[in-house]
Structures are given as C-alpha cells and as structure tokens.
Image: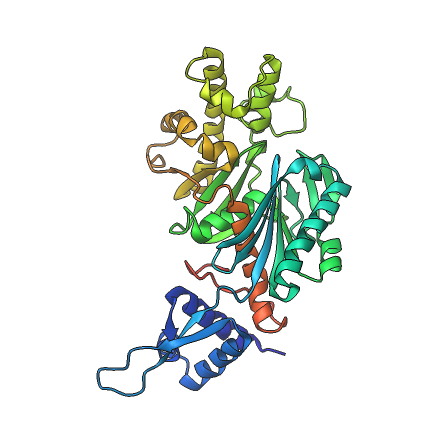
Length: 399
C-alpha cells in the first residue's frame, strides 16, 4: 500500500518534471526542499515505471564535480482513447500525455442515434484502436457526450439531440475491454482542453460556450473546471432571455437554443422552405434582410445570456467554440460584442472579453485526454493504489 505522503511527493515531483521539460534530481531537491535520497528513491521508481526518462547529462557547477543526469516526462508512457459524440459527427482519437493527436477518425453520428447503435459502434471502433496500440498502452477511455452526466455514477442522464437518457455506457465498456472509462459532458471536456493547452491556459477564471447543434458551456473557476453538485453546471442553453415569449415555447431543446443554435437555424430554413445549410445561411446574411434579422436577433439573445453569466462569474475570458461558434465567430462577434457593450456595467465590459476557442474541432477529445490524466495517471503510476489527483502541469491546478 502506497502511503499518502508518497502520493503527495510523487505528484509534486511529476508536476515539476513536466513543467520544466528537462530537469535533474538535484534541481528537484532544491525546488521541493526534500532530501536527495528521498528524491532519488521516487525518481528512480518513476524511471523504472517508464513515466520518466533519463536523457543525458546536464551542466556541472562552475566549481566542477559530477554532471547531473537530466530527466524528462515520457509523453508516450500511456495514451488516452478519447471520443467526442457530437450532434452531427463523432470523433475518435488516440492522444498522448502531452495532448498530441496520434490517430483520429470522424464518422457521422447517424450511426449512433439509438442506444443499440451507440453501444455497438463504440465497441467496434474502440476495439480497433485498442488492438492497434495494445491494451497495456491505454491509460483510459474518455467519452464526451452532448448531454448531462451524473457526477457520481457517470451515467448519462439525458442527451436531447438523441432523445436518449438513463444510459450506462461506462459499465459495459469497462467490462468488455478492462480499461477505466470516463463519461463527461462534451463542453466540460472542451473547457478542460482549453484550460490545459488552449486559449484559456494563461487564465484562472474562464467560461467556454460551445455553439453547435445545441448550446452548452464549461466553467473554469480558480484553475479548476466547475461541474456543480451533480454535474449539471453550465447548461447555458436553458437560459431564459425573454420569458414573455419563451413561456410558450415547446420543451425539448433549451430556450436559448431555440433562439440561436444549429437546431434553431435549421428550423428557420425549413419554415421558409429553404434547402440551405447553416453555413449557407451565414453566407447569405449580408444580402438577405430576413436572414440578417434572424441571425442578429439570435445573437442578441445569446449576448444577453453571456452578459448574465459574466455578471455572475466575472471571468477573465469568455471563449466561443463549437461548430457554429468557431466557424462563424467573425460574423457573430460584432453583434454579440455590441450588445455586451450596452448591457454590461462599464467595469465588467472589456473589448478582449470574447475570444475564439483554439482547439476546435478537437477540443473535446483533447479535453478528454486531460480529464483521463486528472483521474487516472497517478493511480497508474503508483500501481492503482492512489486516490490522489495529480497536480496540473501547466498552471498549478488539479490535473
């Protein structure tokens, strides 16, 4: 049994090794204040495990003496098999521990629309990835879904665009492959990814809003992603921006999503008898007054929701991502920014408040790799005996 003290010290040492890219036992001892024998014992174990590598000699002191051995983190120690189940497409990716995508495939989500289809397609695709790299190289499987997840059980509560709820994916996948599996909301994973190596890595407090088929958000507070009591935080698609109208809206998609989302804009096209894609709609907005009015109105509702979130949480940045948010950012930004200028208190408005997310279209799978490391890496390093969460290697929060 690994002691709690060893867990904490191992976590601290791994954090330093990853932050500094290349360091030595002597430097780690100076930074931590731990004795050289203690550092050597832990580092030697990490080298033997394969999570740390010795890679040549460093510089000796000016006074001479033996050169220290440099050590670095082995990003290929394990990989994470990460899945993003989206409203229209699903991405499978194998990702190393530095967030590099080693292999990826994209398929239409139509194949996963039923519970049976979802389970069968996941099993088939996961099997091919695992067979290719070997089960022993997979740290864990992360699956991002467009819906709510019970934080305790990781059961899927409900996926509106699939009309699937009360579904346990974790148990059957773990039983079949013998690999730890994590289920999480897709936008929460996007926030994980952006706070790790994306647009939010230099900020402590961030909101990420993903605009695609629906609308969701991930919240980073004080360097940690906030999920709420049961994992339901960030359901910005349910925000109310005009109750006098929204009280009459049908249930299904959220009220804000019915003002502006892929679902809302596709419905607008159908109601007008247009065979346009959402992309076509944005390209025609400058030449068609009806389209311009519809998109402008939707963006104003979106801006009101943003303003409420900003006034509540006071983030350093509000990131906009998702299929529509990322690709149409330049078109929707002026409308949203203009509305924010009008409704936000002067002390809360800043021209650099809105930022385009950096990791699209792979933010969910990259965030999934980060999430798996947060939950599983130290347990793997210490032989499955740890419950301690490794510290963030980039900004000091939990990894």
